[in-house]
Every structure is written in structure tokens, then in C-alpha cells.
Length: 70
Image (cartoon, rainbow, N blue to C red; front, side, top):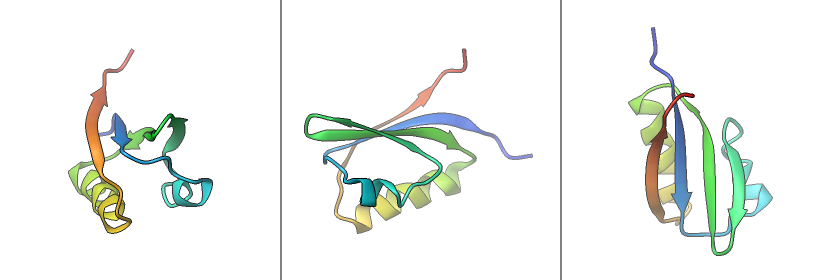
């Protein structure tokens, strides 16, 4: 069974809707000069894939947090 955690990834960019579309399983919220992506990440491999894609797009990651379950 795969562990699932709700994650928040904050990046140092205002991502366009087109760029945010590269992460369909995450919800993008735009903030002044940054964007947060939140959603379910099933395992370390999936998280690394998201981080690698952001890096390949030239987007710097500011922080990655696990959001506690309610």
C-alpha cells in the first residue's frame, strides 16, 4: 500500500495557468511573486518527480511541507 500525504510546495515564481497545468493533481494558488501547489503526493518517488519537473522548468522551490491531517 502506498502512503499518501498532503503536501504544500511553495515556488519562487508566479506560475501561469499553462505551467500549473503540468501538475494536474495539485491545486495552484497564486500569491504575489510566488505560487503554492497543494495536493496528495503518494510517495517519495512522486514528490521527487514533481520537484524534478519544477527544476527542469527553471522554477526554484522555496519550501516543501507536509500538511497534517485534520
